[in-house]
Every structure is written in C-alpha cells, then in structure tokens.
Amino acid sequence: MDTSLARLSETDADAAALVDPVAAAKAASLRYVSDKRPGITRERAQSGFLYRHPDGSEVTDEKTLARIKSLAIPPAWENVWICRAPNGHLQAVGRDARGRKQYRYHPRWRVVRDEAKYGKMLIFGRVLPQIRMRVEEDLAKPGLPREKVLAAIVRLLETTLARVGNEEYAKSNKSFGLTTLRNRHVKVTGSRLTFDFRGKHGIKHHIDLQDRKLARIVKRLLDISGQELFQYLDEDNEPRSVGSEDVNDYLREISGEEITAKDFRTWAATNLAALALQELESYDTKAKAKKNVVQAVEAVSKMLGNTPAICRKCYIHPAIFDGYLDGSLIEGLKVRADETLAHRDGGLKAEEVAVAAFLSRRLGESIAEQKRG
Image (cartoon, rainbow, N blue to C red; front, side, top):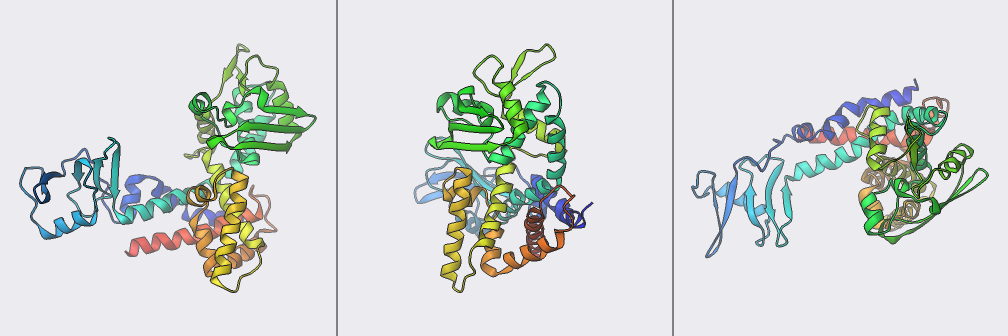
C-alpha cells in the first residue's frame, strides 16, 4: 500500500467520530441533547419575556438569563425550548412566524460539525480507490444488471461532476440529474457521449465525454423501452428504474462507509480549487491573494454548475483558502506531490493524495485545538 495513503488514514478515526453526532459533541466537550427532554420555556410578559424551569418555577439565575440573552432568540418564535445545560450542543429550538422549526446551536458544535462535514472527505479519499476498482469490475459485467448500471452512473458522477438527480425535481421543476435523465438528453456517436439537459436552478448543462466503455453501455440503455435513460434488467429481463437512493446504497455497499453521490462533487471541488490556486501566479499583497481566491472559486463553480457563493460555501473545504492565504497550501501540495510521484498504484492521483494529506494535517490541528479548548 502507498505509504502516503497510509498516512491519510491517521486522522480517519477522528474524522469518523465527528461524523457521529454524539461523538462530535464529545469531541467539542459538549453534551448531545434533545429538545424532547424537559427544558426551559419562554412566556411573554409585559416587559418582554420570562423563562420557566420544567417544574414551572421562574428562572432568576443571572448566568442562565445571560446565556439565554446571548442566544438572541427572535421574539417572533413560538413554542420555545431552551436547553438547561450551558454545554448542550443544541441550545434552543422554536417555531418561526411561518411555523418552521428553527435551531440555535452551541458555537463549538458549529465548529466541530463543520470539521465533520469536511473531515468526511478524508474517509472518502481513503475508500475512493476501492470504489474505483469495484466500479471498473461492475462495468465489465455482462448484460445490464443493477450493479453495472449503477457503476455507470458512479463513473459519470466522477467524470462529469453532474448531480445525481431527484425525481421530485424532475416532475415539479423539469430539472434533471443523472438518475432522472431521459433518453432525449443524450446522444451517442462512437465513443463520444453528449448530454444536454436542464439542471437544478434552471442551469443548462452541455457535457461532452469520450469513454468507449460508457458509450457502449449507454447505447444499450437507449434500446430499453421507456423514456428513462438509466434502467437495469432484472432476473426476468424486465426493466427497473434506478434513483438517487439506489446510487447511495450502492456506494455504501462497495465502500463500507456512509458515502453519498454528493461526496464526489465535494471531493472534486476541493481538489480543483487547490489545483487552481496552485496554478495561479504568486501574490505579493493580500488583495491579490483574495482576487486569486475569487478567480479559483469562479472557475470551479462553472465546472460544478453552481453559483460561486454556493460552490464556496457548500463544496470547497475552507482550509484550502485559509492555507492559500497563510502560505501553507502551495508548499504543502508541492512537497506531498513530489513524495507521491513514485507511488501511483494506490488508486489516487498524486495531486489527490497531496490535497488529502494537507486536509488531514489541518483537520488534525483543528481537532487538537478543540480538545485543548
């Protein structure tokens, strides 16, 4: 096994623990609580609000009242529940003016959950080689069984960065992802696949792809009766539809982890952002550095079919930008890429190993800081 890949797994235990909400709370020295347990309630009074313990007595403790005030619970919220413990991961719950349930979390919980979201990427990077290997094996299966069709979708997830799709969006918004594509959305010419479809938020997608193996499979899929592109043939040779949950079940099955289709977009966006920043000219002022970050985000957002704001907020690991601005990213990527050039049999590209190793170190530093706090 590639020694660089082995090093990537050193933070896996912490990353996996943070994906578990109870473990995440513990990592932040918090208690995982539920609003189903008795808590402090809020009542309207002539001069604002008063608060009561579960036994009905009024809350008069100054520290507790100060904590409640710091939560800045909107006056319009109804059915307010407030955690009795100052170290509860969930501090308050209520219903807004439209009846929607809203939450106030402990600041440390938000930090550790952000790390959990991106810490999961390290787990994804560790299992990605076996996902790729299994997909390659399933694509070689004869006929059009479930595993082969799902493997084709996963290959497309990785190579096109398209969304997996949602049947409800397809019906109500006429917006499509891979699992909801119709036959009319694709053309096959030799080994070339051309996809044209309307995606989420009405964004038009035009994707050209050269892949002889996928082209052969999609050409056979087009021969199946019905308008849905991705269908498999069951044991009775009857066509069966596949949805996003089938894809996620397949990913969990072949990886042994809680991997989803979206993880491919997060992984790709983070890697693409790191490489884009690496290729940009060096900066001599903070203003130039920030301009380079904006340029990198815009480039990645176009590849993902997102707005730059959504791309930066939901897909690119913030440590990439922090590392670029403090100078550690570029040097870290160069050193790790040089170390891994001779180790290409691990199933990840050298640049993927370099980015994952950088994130592993940053996550480890963040977890250590949380534990010290």
